[in-house]
Length: 423
Image (tube, rainbow, N blue to C red; front, side, top):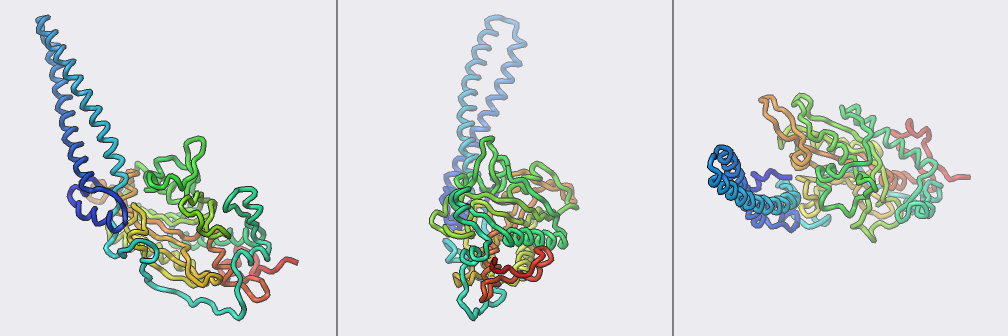
């Protein structure tokens, strides 16, 4: 959420953000509503003051006729006030709804474009492996090695259901442990985050109101979190953090749930796009300084790159175009890893910063050295997501005999260095 004062003073910037993010939002119409709300609030306050003065005057009137006339006048005033308060409540409800629809201002370095085709490639690492045999896709590879059950997964969980088995289950846990240990060494606090979250956390992190159709809701008016970012942002809601404790850096692990409502027909086979998966999320709360956000954005992106490099996976970094980032985002990098069977890079990590868009909604503040209370800035990044990353690990490390080598950095966690065909 933007500061309404900022919107009033910078309407052209907000209009540029709406255009660059390819959204529909009437900035001028909102400002008219905002002005009407302020005028109506002033009227309500004036009427309340009149009502208080009239009430005080009645108690001092001795003459019965004069008192009756004053009481009648007070009733009429209350009726007018009640009507104005009702009118204000309606306009305030609409104002609050629209405030949740105002997009954040993208950084000038964000490319102007509508979708993934307009992303800008920043750099590449590693060379895609040249196989001396025809590599197979992850579904074939995993089923041959008895690592994956898709049909039985669908039988139990429905569309996009799956079971990971044998070495795949252990490999997934090894990846989580490796990433959490690496981030702990860098000063990030490991956290196991809750999956059930209250609605205000989804509004606060910017996932609501726009993405309701993609979130699972329970019978208890709780929601299954789509990413640890949501509960982690809620963890410090309505708090004032001493500046000396910033930046707060977390490495949060959690299961994640997404309905993938907008992706019907996309990646319907395999383990790339799933309703249920696991993720280690980097999350940072920092001072309200743009240059800090830029520096920390590069830091969390570099952390994720180091993970992918340690796994030996070729990848590229892209900056997403304005039309491909969310309302809440200032800037987003994606890491795309190489998938041999598809002969292309595909998104495995996302890295974003938000300024105070989320923290303003969640009321997360800090006390500066000058004793000023300011909103924190927030950032987050996918440190690793499984089982998606297994696709690239298994496909890039497959051998001609059908076995798969395990990246060296994971072997102390797996206890094995090779996945071979079952006899």
